Structure formats: structure tokens, C-alpha cells
Length: 322
Image (cartoon, rainbow, N blue to C red; front, side, top):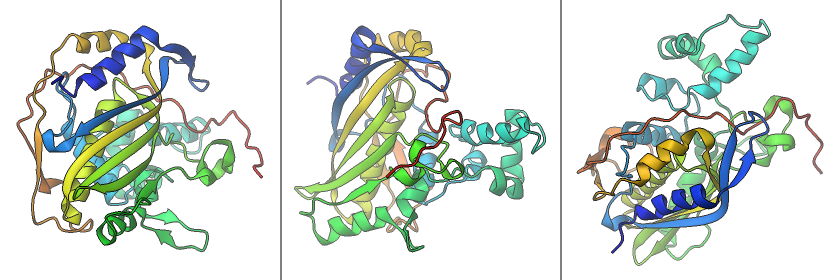
């Protein structure tokens, strides 16, 4: 059988061969893009943590815990030496500094203060209306917060034949021109909805990702949502089934092309496995240290620069939506 990682490699090759050029309006950065693709992974055969380049497992694990625990401040990530979200709150801080509202800080100085000064972190490390908040603390119109993830897990436990166990991060009230400028999410919600489904006593999870950076982001997203399926299966008492990754726009940035070509000549290795300690029984008592990754033997990492693109554009005026 063809190694399941070739689904990813073949898609990346297709984008290089056939992707159409698009330009991000906010940054001017070019991408090569296709639309509407899908990958499927049988999680009983291993965790799809890509092997043709080393994926930052610690980042996957701590970021997912950050979401699962309902957090939206990068202080937790910084204190655990995970820096994949640093650019976004610094971008907001830098905008204030440019207006003379706060002292000038380099990005390194800003992140150092986030990790050592809790008061500063609470003030400047918060990213409103992102995944952790919306998964676990969705703001209802009457002032309540809705725990979507716990609800979805309860649904599949109480009715394994249900078709409604959906968690969404797409809240129009806080997105793009639909939002009031002062309330707009400054981070582009990309992996915006997932559904749980039980088949043959196993939890399956399908992710819809509206926008996907194939080289840097997608390997992380595959691993994160596959691990999420494992965690949900463990906490609900089911086996683990399939992870289905459905894409809207999937693209490669122009400054990642040479790195992608390097990855494409590598042969996939066996996927690792993951084990979750029996002490983890609820979302509330689950901790990153309860997850053990076994037999991960990837090719070396391939470095590429993160492109901070998409999201709310300050230059675009808000419009009324009726």
C-alpha cells in the first residue's frame, strides 16, 4: 500500500505544478493555490505526524492543550517555549507603539516580558475571539458562555448515532468587515470547523480548513487534529477511527518553494504512535504530560519563514451587514 503521507506530498506537488498565483492584499505576498482537496488518515494505523521533515511535536501538543483548556493568552505558550503565536500579539503591540501609546520594544523584548511579567502578559498577550475561547467559551447573546467541545463530546457519548457534534470557530460577529473594528479578531481563523462522528465504536473527526499553508501550517494541523481525535476518543471511551482533512484554499507561499522541493525528494517513514495515560479522564484534568509519543523517527527539519498574512485589515473600513 502507498504510504498515507503521500497524500500530503502529492498535494504539495500538485500545487507546485498547477497552483494559480494569488496575492494577499494585506502583505503583497504571493501564493500558488488550488481549491477543494481532501486527505484521510486511519488513526488506528499510526499518528500522521509527518516524517519527511521533523514536525515540532512540543508545539503541536502545547498548542492543542492551549485550545482544549480554553486559553487565549500566549503567556502559557511562551512559558513553555512555544513561539508559533508570537507574531500576532506583537503586531498589535507594535501598532500601539507606532502611535506612541506604549514604549517601543523589539519582538524579542516583547516576548521576554510576556514570559516574565504576568501583568504585562495579561494586558498585551491576549488574542480575542480565537480557538480556545470559541471552543470552550463561545460568547452567547445573553451573557452565557457555551462550551462547544464538551457539548459535542457529551453528544457522541449519549447518542453515538448523532450527526450534529460540530465545533466551530467561525463567528461572523468578530470577523473581517462583518465586525465592529474595535471587536474584530486580528488573527485569521483558518481551521474553522470540525465534526465528530462515531462509526463502528470509533471516533472519527473531520476538519474543514478554509485556508491552508501547505508547507508550514498543514503538517502542524494534521498532527493537531489527529491528536485531538485520539484525546476525544480516550475521554469518551471509544476507539479511534479516521481523521478526514478537508481544505478550501490550500496554497504554498512563494518563499517556501525551494523547501517544498527538498521535502518532496524524501521517502516517508513509518508513522509514530501515541499513548494517553489512563489518569486523564476529563477535559479538566487532561494535561500535556499525559500524552506519550512513541517511535517518531523523521527526516531532519526544513526551516522556512512564517508569513503573517490574512485577518482583519485596518485599511478596509467596516461596513454595515444586514
